[in-house]
Length: 215
Image 1 (cartoon, rainbow, N blue to C red):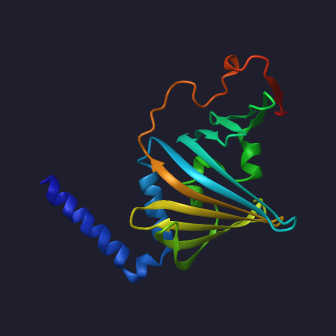
Image 2: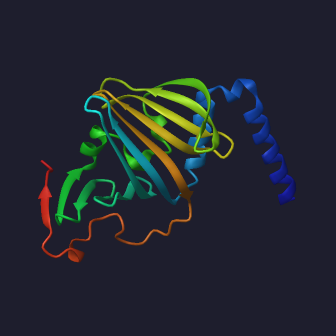
């Protein structure tokens, strides 16, 4: 019975994504992605980010990993390690042994919240189906999200594997002439969440300079 049920679920998915109407409906596709994201508990993403500053002719590429559970995350960028417990953000700079403390709302105002990578489209965006593109060797649906003036970016370009229902790449088009591209390298939903992994471990960094930016 389980095999029969799985067969019909697979068949239904095939019919959904082969339908010319639904396949070009960004609302239907993003709803499916949101539904799948709700099944995730803890997950981990390895990615590459590329910042291109068009005004100053500057480019920076970084590899990073982010571990996420709900609105909590642990982001490792090498030069910086960021912890967030859903309310407070700690940005630790190992080389300087300094840790900056901020509210999560401040971080959200300055850019994209890593914990919302699979649900960011649920915010108030105008959506547009653009077409298809090959990204990182995968056939992707290209959907644009257009932001209101309160966001630091005007457009998010989403490149989505609409068969696997996975995010492959996000391009954030900044208002000040800087674009950031996030490309997913690996994605795992088997993250083991351990106590304290989303808060900065002060006791493990003797002499750390804590800089509290909260009002």
